[in-house]
Image (tube, rainbow, N blue to C red):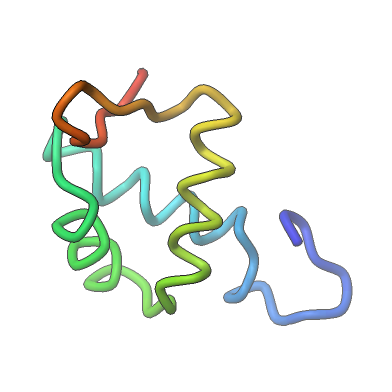
Length: 75
């Protein structure tokens, strides 16, 4: 699902993760729903794809969260 062979690239987590990072970059620290809204301004993605992209970015060490649950960039 990260680099799909048989689905449209717009549905890949790789692309969705890139748009999430692009939306997070100017904000620095943001709540989950604010990041979802900003990400959807850049690329239409359903909430399940957004959530899976966040999981992938967290596992890759590119995002983290703080004590109050805000999402922060790790680079």
